[in-house]
Length: 196
Ligand SMILES: [Zn+2]
Image 1: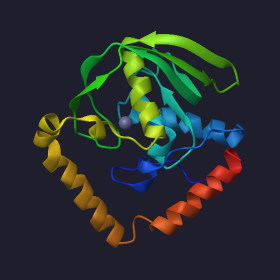
Image 2: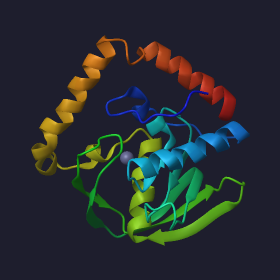
Image 3: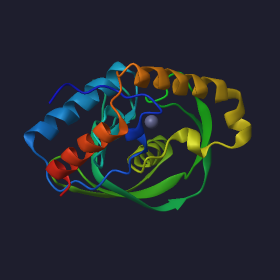
Image 4: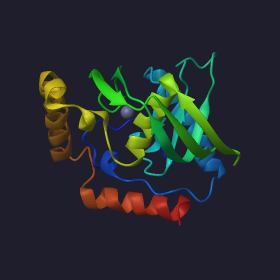
């Protein structure tokens, strides 16, 4: 497996709804370690697998953003329920570097998932971690934070979003980004390995 790289918006894998994982092997564990490294390198607090072109249902997080401080968390097959309250706060995304906007999220929620060693996680969370979890689970469903903005909030950043789209178009024309068919084949191969 080649080393993982962030794929910027509007790469099609960011729009893929990831399937649940049924097996975890050493290669996947190594890729999860690599996801943490990439998250720290780009100063993120959460990273969904499809942001590094791994369209399977897991994300990593560390609300402190600091490797030394922790806690490092891996959520496999996360399911959110019992969302309560609403809160507005600024978000950014490693798939759209440099863009920030206010996003409305639930204040608290219940998360059910599995950690890397197969332990079930079933807990109520609130605050910043609840926001990270909602942002990352959105990724696994192919949803980006810019999809959740009102027109009023989106308008001032629409030029920045368009720049990502134009740059993607030109990199696709140059062949740097594989065709939709080739990407679909990559996704099917990964799903065959971890999801079926
Ligand atoms: Zn993101």
